[in-house]
Length: 151
Image (cartoon, rainbow, N blue to C red; front, top):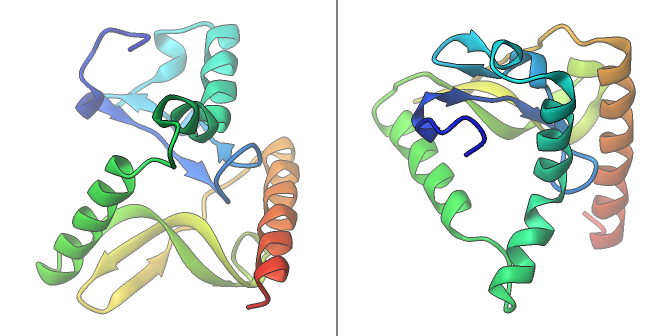
């Protein structure tokens, strides 16, 4: 919307849980392979990151009766296709981490390679110190939710 281009041209990366503690990694966001920073100044990127974090609440406000369903449904269809057709797509998924990103014993949103064998690889990207701190905050929030539902 901000760039007036097709959403199909945008590749973005968000780590962690959903909501205010999600960690959009804007420096990995591209428009047909071109870094987002080529198109937008940092203050606009920061505003988009903030809106991304609050997007779930925004959707609930408009729907009035529940949460989003279109994006999760589309994501499930893409995951199923990657498994059934062994596409080995790199997708953002909640994967069980055993030390990746410094996190143990927790399902957490990270990029993975998904194929017939399920999660075939957890892709660990380099993070800045600030991004690592945001990951710790998101991990704490996810653990709090897990504790609340007593898994």
